[in-house]
Length: 508
Image (cartoon, rainbow, N blue to C red; front, top):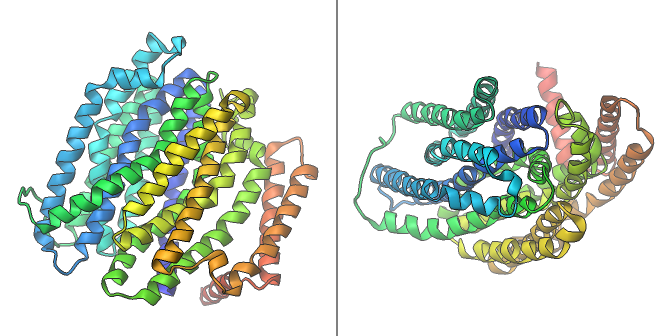
């Protein structure tokens, strides 16, 4: 377990740097275009390529790792078979999407006359540049899976760093030459750089070579049986972003951008942690499942969720009470003015409440996949994303505007979490929260209450004219409060972290 968390920590550090570059890209877009139709065009054009990357790429990666670890798999042949399937599938999907470009953009921009003409043409040009990157992004995800299954977690994480850094640098440089279209060109170029980096990393393993094979075996059948439900499940989860764009389109100008800025800010701490955990945990889970290590699986499940709770709930509290200040500090520069902040901050305040639930849902789903159950998470996702999420948005969008989009995400994420937790307990004996009798879960709640109270008071009374002073003071109060309360109430995970850090500092 200690080794697992050490690996997660190392991967998390790389992810932090990678996410910072990705986040800087959003900040630069805000600086250059604010909450305008230009920024809306950039975010809209990238929605579908990113959708395919996360849904299709994530499904293939998860399935490939699972089948690769099975004793009956001819790994050398399976590498070629899965590469062929991934390449052909993503190429066809990309070609279909590009063929229906006009229809897709009409779907996004229905009822918005101001998006006709020049701005619609801009979105089309961005889309034509960005869409081919889907093939490269999904292939990168596939290569990352092969690296992870060989315990080269840092390479797959570093590839994301390479992608985000090159995307930012190329986009900024080109945007001053060709305008917003530079972001589309950069999406394609940086995806190419990432897949090239991963190819080099995989070749250095001197393991099974990549190639083309159309041979059908039991492994290819198993791949499709796992991938199809996972694609549906992944697509359903990624529909959050797609539905957010569609509902925001019918609202005020800049609503798409405001929702995007708020969701990106919410995803920043969540994504750093959950990406690191899921990158490492699924290959380990697959091996433990193959070895029938039930005790080890249950320990990973409960401890992992407990760590997510200890880390993300305090961050949620801070982000909720400092939502406006966070938007000011991160985005309010250049063309991102006070009006953009006023539009974005209320959305962020609601989004951050879903932070833990979204991360936990992704974490728990990996345990279902490791047990070969890709159906239950899909059913739960469909019910919540396409049912509860849409219902909430439809009921409240007229009254609350863009904030209704965040409410839909929050409520559906909570219900999905409860479904996953309950089903995992009764079906697989995986225990957490109320189902777990360990005292560590209940010991964490008094600190959460104290942290909430103190951070609230700080956000109300320690407000200064300069936004950065307010932010720095708030962060200091937050960290001191978390440190003291976790120590006083005997949060063992926190004390263990302090002990390890102290030992390493003394050695240094």
